[in-house]
Image (cartoon, rainbow, N blue to C red; front, side):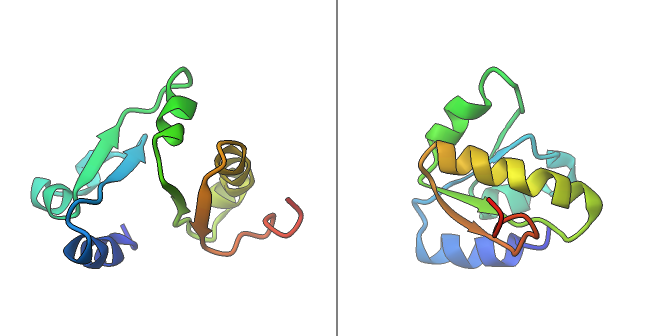
Length: 98
């Protein structure tokens, strides 16, 4: 996960913060990494996704530039905006249009 070092630095400065990752495959990280970054892995569900996003203070979109991410980025952007969340993301080709 490319953003993990930044998350670790953030948690060091803000130890009470928590990162909620919806639908993330936790097998990609060790238990130590999950604990060190204060990650809360939430199973994805169509029924609960919006409710979980509403619990966020800030939405982040650390997506890679590939076809799958390009297809997803516009929808995630709209989801976060519709939930009135401040958003931090990489550049996405559809952001200027949306």
